[in-house]
Image 1 (cartoon, rainbow, N blue to C red):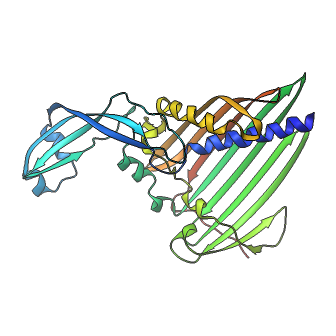
Image 2: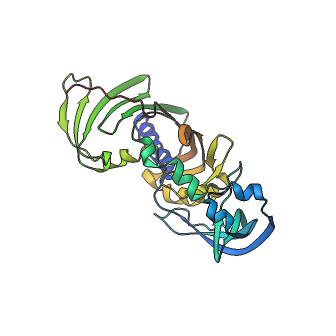
Length: 328
């Protein structure tokens, strides 16, 4: 019986962490339809002066106004997620500036509660900002399952430290699993030498140490996804601005989760419910500084009921000063 509980617990962990990964699934998933434009007021000289215009362009300004674009969203089925549509009308602030015979459109600086713009998203996740830095990730997944008066609890933890420079990277991953009063811990260490300026997306030589090995062994594995560390490959409209950065747009993500639950159900005979997710990202000096995300769910399978919760935190530091010193 305990073995069956363990199997279900592991399946629930895999399902929950898969849901967690959905926060960063690839591809722009939302299509927007223009509905109308509402003028709010003419722009002041001070507001025009703050725009990114040359002196010649500012002199040539014919008119400038601020207003709102009204639009509706509908989803594009990307990787079979977020198939539901959101048809309620939304607004976004815009500046409309006529310079000579040319019209230009600007998005003013975001304030708390605004949906992220692509410009803000691209600025924060500019890959060049993360070439030299240290990133530390901690993930804890707690799963509890019970049936017929018996229960089992499992805790999985992973700590990953990435030190990256333009020439090399050093990665240390410590993972542990605790269940039935037994804990197993495993450490994996990677050293990567880049052969070009493309980092993990180019050619590289990989060395590995596992299980307390003293010697480095040349190895190979696909590390292309490691190159996107510090990046969320998702539609920027899933996030809204906060005073310290941005967070997951729970209103929109709730619809996404309804479809995600349907896709997840059936994994190892599991039925998932009450799937919830939150994520917050703090930005300092135009770069990520810290991030936290939580995914939780209830599940049932073959008369067994339980819950699972995955919590992840990340810290980004030592931009431009990170040093990798490994001897092979």
